[in-house]
Length: 79
Image (tube, rainbow, N blue to C red; front, top):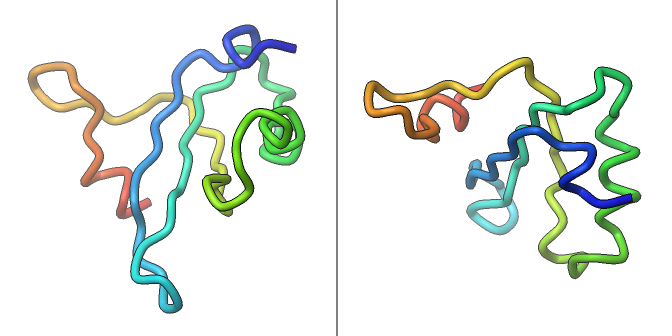
């Protein structure tokens, strides 16, 4: 299945990591409420390299926005 067909809005931010300094964390607004992080990870497994795969994939109802309408990445980093 296409990622576009299952994900309404994605955002990836860097979060602190003790081993590497930073690691990617994904926040996803799913199109279908039954979508899980595991299902998304399995779908992405053949599309992206393992070192780029976010260890944390969190489903959210909406992404925080700034006053100008951009994704508020600082707020996401603190979730």
